[in-house]
Length: 516
Image 1: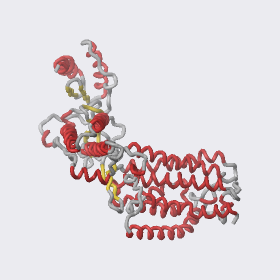
Image 2 (image 1 turned 30 degrees about the vertical axis):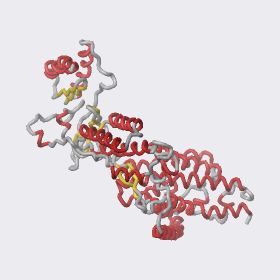
Image 3 (image 1 turned 90 degrees about the horizontal axis):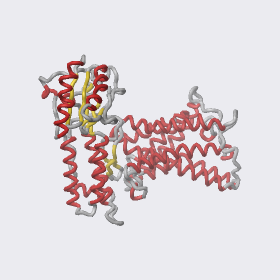
Image 4 (image 1 turned 120 degrees about the vertical axis):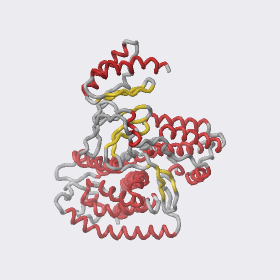
């Protein structure tokens, strides 16, 4: 009340009587209590207002918050460009305002829940569920419904549905998390929690405030180019949000046994990024850092090969574990079983399909051997002369000694154990946990039931640093993704991966170690 009375004279009247007549372009002022935005058509006008605004407030012993007061370039993006990159965003009254494309492909101003507000709401739900986890389930359900409906009543505007859906998904996870901590024996698996949600369904997001352009007929048209902020009446003309790179929607990851676990979905941009960074990391390790330790005309030392495996796939393993932790999962068998499908196929039909996929994959892998050799002879696909012989289609390897010429394998139990352990932990478990356990369930929102195909193809393209092996890797990648996707078994994908990468190497290494 006091801010409205005081700022009416300090800001509102001053803006109408002193500022507006002196600027060249059109402008406007929108204020709610002590929060306000000023929009100017011309940049020079905006900078003049920004310069005199602190002086006006100082006359009345008032100050402007230095961190919350800023000049934002909010002009309409170029219609010839596909994105609005370079155009600023701003938060006002709990919403982030930004430019986006409507369903018809036109640039419109969109609004979504501000990140800080969404984080604050999730934090409040977290603390409430923690402090009231011993209350009767029916009472917890009643209060959670009130909290969610209250959030929907304010933030339920057209174009903000994905942020509302993200809050609902977070609320479910938080509720299950604290219900599982009522006692030492109260852990709730997702199957049981889904039955609880069927009995006590949390309210779904809904759009409460929806204004159409027709309802704004007769109002003054605003300038096409704004250098500060648009008028609030212009912000109600909003299309549906379609953020490609936001983890906003929630879906259910289904395995062959129809187990359902809510999993947030990535957009296409984020999916490509999650496959691109490992390719860049391996390229840096091999062609920039590792190459410095290879003598001219020599081959890759075995110790360097092991370090590339450890640091390369180790990074994938670490990132996968961190991202799972950020989702709120405990690093236990029960905590990860449903999320990363850490289970074997159920039913004889699933095992028959698994056997068919295995036989088909092995057959195609043998067929792809000559294809890899032919591709390795094509300019641009020829492997470097220092590349390890075991992964070089142009090299003939008849024994383990030729694959590891700098290692004496006879009775070398330590090296054989170390090599197989590194391969199992980092190469097999690390890659499968990251690509099939973590990423694959997040791709269904974009690729639907063909998410496993997209996963296998992108996994193959990730190996661009050894592009002469892409045909063979494609067969393996599709097999691994099918095992973890339609068959719903990450351990089966690991078995496929180990057989494809290490079965024959293990046999050769053991024979060389025993001197057979």
